[in-house]
Image (cartoon, rainbow, N blue to C red):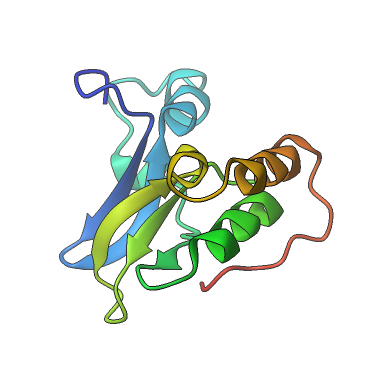
Length: 119
C-alpha cells in the first residue's frame, strides 16, 4: 500500500469480493493490538463489503457514499465481479463538486440511521 500510495484495497477470494482493507484497519486492528507480523489480511480487513454497480448513476452513488460515511467503494459489474474502485474525489472531478461536497458533509458527521447500499 505504501509503495503504491493507496489507503484502500478490495480483498478477494478467487473472483469473489470478500472485504476491504484500509491503512486505518491496519493501524487499528493490527499495529495498535501488537499483531505486526502475525495478523493476516482476513483478520484485519472489514468483511462487511459495501459496493456499487458500474452502471449506476454517479450522483446516486455519491449520495449513498455520504449516507454510509464512506470515501471509497468497490465497483462491481452485474455479475458481481470487481471492475474498479470509486472515490468521493472521482465524483467531484467527473460529476458534481456540489454533490461530492454534500456527500463529504455526510461522511464527516456522526452516523445516524444509516441505510445499506447493495450489500
